[in-house]
Image (cartoon, rainbow, N blue to C red):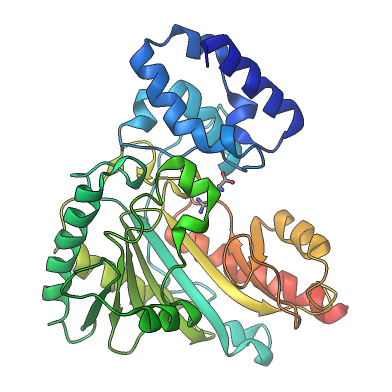
Length: 364
Ligand code: DAR
């Protein structure tokens, strides 16, 4: 397809799918001015949003440098998603100090003392392409780097555990029954080759090679290898103390980062991630809340989604992205913005948002 045809196709997507941020901000004159090699690079970044017009962001970076190399195209999309006006300088800060913050969910309501809580950060090694541009050999080579780090982490009293690979022939390979059991328990990620957005971007390529998960002995600290980013490092607990959850993750992240190559970072965007929606803190913090009144028994998410958006929160089914709510109204609630907010601010936004949604739920 020629340059003009591409520009025309994206203009059509912009009209039909105004929520597609790549199409909304695609700059045809900028694209025309690129040399052919850079045009091809940018099209690879935008391919997911062109082939999947219903995309929300519609782009995935292929290399950490893409955010600087194509900032004319990518920065407006990033600012739009994260709600950062053009006049505001983007400079990601980090603050994990949750001391003194409100983080006890039971203080909102005793019925919130035992909810499923999860917080994860995305990290990519600076020494490899991002997942969308990795070869099969690079995916397995990175998994070997991660497995070597886990071999040391296993010795740590607080984070010791085991690495489970789904790479055929890996010394850590688990069988399909174990894989399915780990997916069912929400510990392991689903077959990525079923995700059309990731398929077009190349992020699910060579499935299942180079994929696996580390899990601590008490199963509250996990690391996904080879999902949408090189690593998804997470803490997950049932309970009501968000501070304990964040501290569990933060300490584990600090221990693990000493065992790995340097992470890809940007002076502007902080932690560099495949998806622009994850830039900055690279953090997704979420709660599973039962909101049967707000969701009409899980049949209608419109009211809870509108209320959550006003609180800076996103709502999805408890089964992960693109899943439905439970019949008991079980939904996954998480702060949307990850760039220009610190880790502690994300936690506080989750806590305050949960309190506000719960107030709407109980008032009926
Ligand atoms: N399908 C992508 C998802 C964007 C946000 N979620 C991620 N990165 N897992 C889209 O652009 O709609």
